[in-house]
Length: 227
Image (cartoon, rainbow, N blue to C red; front, side):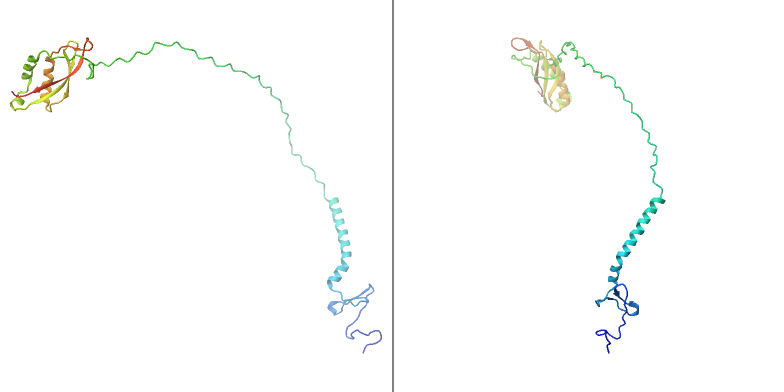
């Protein structure tokens, strides 16, 4: 049953009124906080928002007092002396620029005599071509045959061994044999040596080149045969 002025409210729900303009009950006692005259239920978040302005003012005051205390109690910082020494720089006067004289011109040395021309090779040293237009002719053929018979090695002659040797002969302007060299060997050293012994006995007429006598190299065959 609802009494006068209590229509619409549960008989089992206690009601408490607060003189601050809102009604509320502690959650741990089962009371419900209601906005006065509205019947709107307030949560814990709503209550925190309504009380936050007061907490903010208190926090600002505490912060101001803390900063004032720090400025009063803490000693001011002083810069330490690093001991920097400033040294004055003195200007250095450089010596005047020295100009080096140009190098002297190269002295022209007098030219000495030209080097001597290399000596012409002696044509008598080795067989070489010497021009001539008149051939030398053997003058003492009979004498040469007698020497050839005498120098023919006896052992080879009795064995019937024959041979031919071609010689290089260097003839002077007088037609005399001055040097002898083997041009073509007979294949038998005894016959080659016998031909070398025969050559100096030969006498030739002088070779001519443009009507002038000249020394020349000529080739000459020497033949050893059994009669």
